[in-house]
Image 1 (cartoon, helix red, strand yellow):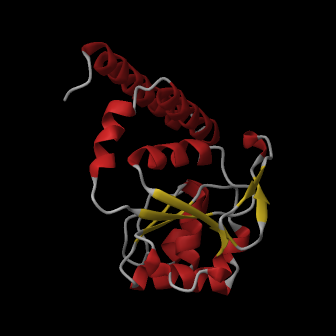
Image 2 (cartoon, helix red, strand yellow; image 1 turned 90 degrees about the vertical axis):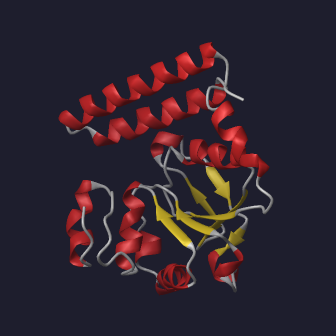
Length: 200
């Protein structure tokens, strides 16, 4: 069933505005502000219920999809909006990190998040369908820890869907699992992607 006309019209206007905003900010090379505004827009569309007709279709799947959110210190402002989208899909979300709790970046008001399970406590990554590394400031803990890098490598070799948001692509580069892949990552770290023969 298609959503009512006024919802489709609002949805269309929001996405047109998003495209114009993205183009404008890319031209001025202000990617950090762009990320914040896109996250704000995503939050707004979710809170207004504009995205509901699109997301409701995904809740009819027979098997529950399990997605693992891999977090790091200074996790990004978009975390809440990303989580809301996957919750509306009806997916089972588990959060993991190397330490017991972590703090968000300044743009998310430095709130503390208690995660569901420590990364070191996950014995079989293939219990999940998807592993996704959440956005953040630098991902220094994940990038420099052999346990987390092996975890990502095991997810890839186990044929899971493995994704990363924005700067989190650095973790995939550090784990050396994007050789020959086309990636969309933060431009500040292009040399890191190219060093492992990924294409940007």
